[in-house]
Length: 164
Image 1 (cartoon, rainbow, N blue to C red):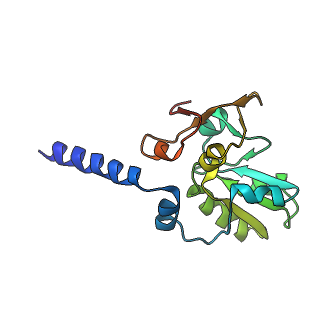
Image 2 (image 1 turned 90 degrees about the horizontal axis):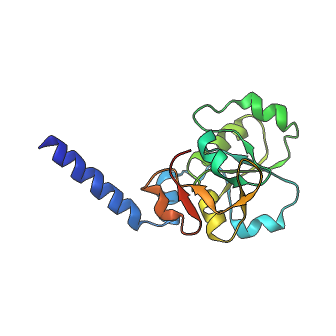
Image 3 (image 1 turned 90 degrees about the vertical axis):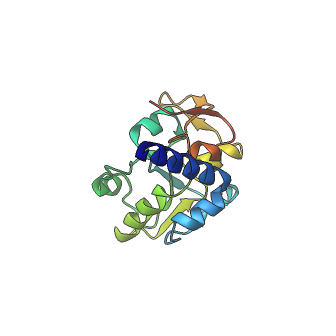
């Protein structure tokens, strides 16, 4: 009986989350401590540094061209400070939809970086709006790691990949 209750509650939590959209999820899960930048606003900025706050297996499937992988679970600030010495650099942090990237953005702010932005909707929104992503061989691909089945509903364009 407990297994049935667990399964049903898990099933309904997935169904409920699937009905939300990216703005609702971000409003619920983020504190907005790192300012958002929307995909269409990227063109207005110059000399952007993209940091991918997803895990290595996600980055390997695809990422925004030129993005530096910084991860989430094993984020190391010295990897960032060694690669980005200008504390005034315009840094765009992204993950799948913008939840993990906010937390990494907060860490960057504590390290003294002044122009840190969280990509609104993450790589999912970037891909959904026609952005090009590349694989580990730097070739354009339609594949995007979907993180998990529940989060994959927010990726509406491209090929969803669930494993590395």
